[in-house]
Length: 484
Image 1: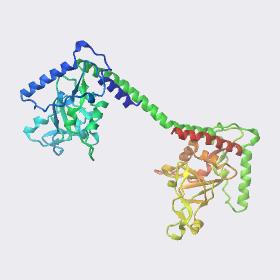
Image 2 (image 1 turned 135 degrees about the vertical axis):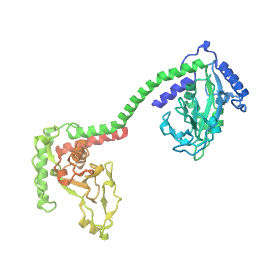
Image 3 (image 1 turned 30 degrees about the vertical axis):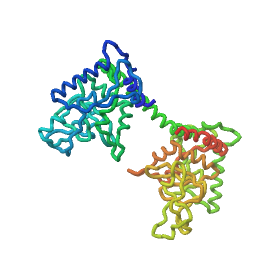
Image 4 (image 1 turned 90 degrees about the vertical axis):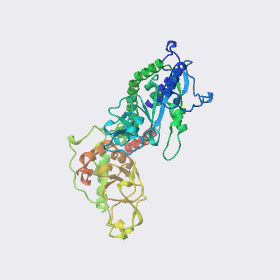
């Protein structure tokens, strides 16, 4: 149950007579209603309020639920002394008097400091003056139906035309009426009477015809007091609920990060001695790289410094080995052929930019290069991992499924004798992305060049263990996606 649903339930109990007990000594809603009508007749006779057309009797079909025997169903207009539209005038920085608008009412408070002024003739002011315990009602726009109980008026003020003011007998509890205007019964009747146009509009007749349950005054006060007692508990519930919602929102992502971290720490699957060691795999990779260099298929790299104890970020199994990224494959930084050579463009090979890498997937429907463009662009084979190395997208990565070219904001690694999927899980782990960001240079825009990227540390398990890690990740990560 959301905090708003809980509040709605409490308000529903309140207007059904189930929040506090009934006390016979407090009288009945019928008796109170007759007192209010007698008071209204006296005000009409004295010329203080206008006589209104009688409202229709409440039918059985209109009554939405049972109320206590001591209560009475009434119409809002029968309780009101007046239901009046506001004054239409332009808002000004200075003027005759302040004028409260819909936009000045925020979070059930009037922001009096920003309420503008307006011009109005002296004889009209009295009709629109606001007094404590008036209720304002938004009759149009996105806030239609929102109500505000005036508790204080720091200086003489009137109210604007998109508001309706309702004034009622002093024999009624203002806060009980305000709580009714927050209940589901109120909103249901409002929506039924709202004119559906580009700007939703609800008029005074709709408000006047609304039915509401009327308890004795003393019970109204006790209901309001009970609600006031419960509101701090609702606030506490809302804070706890919001924390839980935030936790639930973060949980799938946090779980995914934890699983990836366990994977690259050697804690996701067991180690098997018969599968060899990371050191043995490393030596095989170096031998293969030398063969590729000798055959002219890749370039010889500069020697990298030995890994020191201070660099090692966490413990890994004894059968694993810490290596630098470029030691498990060959790397490239992309480039963009000059647009001054239109012959470089054409429908031949996808040209990947950071925007084409989304949630671990690569989209290939970007502009393409022509055969001549391929000669001047950096091209990588299927299975290569592309990773963004600049800006707010730093760390985004994907495995290419075909031969592609890519721009200078992307680094690429083509693995040798390693699982592409395992290497991808390392490069997309929170550990590796943090390492990228910590190593990034630049000012407003972080950049990690290929030299720094190449030298970042990754854990290397035996190849068969890499494959078992990938298989386990393929079982677990979809469960995290389902939680999202």
